[in-house]
Structures are given as structure tokens and as C-alpha cells.
Length: 201
Image (cartoon, rainbow, N blue to C red; front, side, top):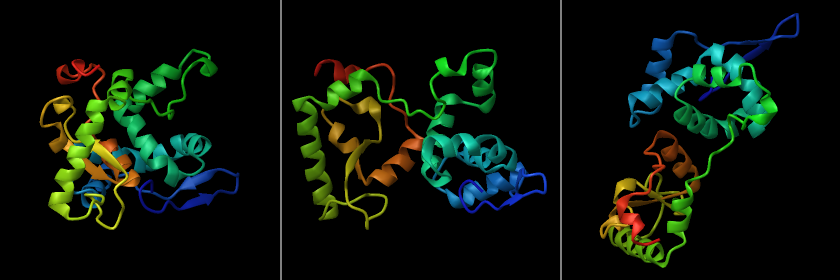
């Protein structure tokens, strides 16, 4: 399974047979139990990626892009979130030269305005204020999802507050692994620059 162990049995004819569930309702129930804090859309994506048909179709692509399934889990979820559905991807690959298309698992970076804003002196001050805020609350700065992990990065829990006076309250300290997991389920960085950011660029 995508999120647990996947038993792969080689047949007499050299094909891989995936011993995973194909019952969607069971897979969604599994996702709800494994990720109770996530929304139903995230549960559907986990169920989709765990389905044995998906395993057969995507596994070679994930392994070729990420090296192994474990390293490919979060990028694949992010890809699926941005894509919307597998059918959308399938349509995009029909009747064209695949070499001219971007890799479906290629991580799309943040918008240019986001990188520019992160380089401003204003954002540096916002980060310092957020660190003081969380130090006062936690006593020691660490990942807010798993206290045993070190703080490595701030995550915006609401991109709409970027550039505003209270932005520091919406910066959440995380480790890189938890940040990747949280980012996979959203919210997403908006393509359009929030109004509050414009005055700082």
C-alpha cells in the first residue's frame, strides 16, 4: 500500500501483481483512521494512491522520479493536489511528444512574488516577531506538529494574511518533514499576490 506496506508478487510471466485493496470505501476508511486531522479530499487522494490499480500504473513513474516509493509519497500527493485527477493527467499525455512536457512529478516552485517577498527586510522582521511569539508560548522553539523535531521552517497557515500587521500569528514553526506533509494537504500558495504583500515589493 502507498502509505503502509505493499506486497508485490512476481507472476510466472514476469509481471508484478500488487496485493492491495481495490475496495474504495475500505481505502477511504483507512485514510480517515491514518490521517484523522485531514479533510475528505486528502482522504480520497490517499485512497486513490493506495488502490492496487493506481499502484500498478504510478509505481514505475514514482520510483524513476524519486528513487523509491517512500521518498515519492509527498511529491506525488502534491502533484495530485495540483492536478485534480488522474484523468486530467492522462489527457495531457495523449497524442504528443512526451519529451516536450514537464514531468508530472516535477515539483512546481512557489510564484516569483512569494520568493521576492521572502527576501524582503519586512519578512525578516515578521519572522523574528513570530519566533518571539512562539518562544513565549512554547518556552523552546520546536516543530509545532511533533515537539521532538527541531524547528526548521515557518509555514503560513493563512496566505491571505501575508504582508498584514498580524502576519506573524499565522506563521507556524515546523520541521521540514512535517512541513512537507502539511503543505501536501493545503492551503496552497496563491498564484495571485495578496494585497498586503504589494506594498512591500
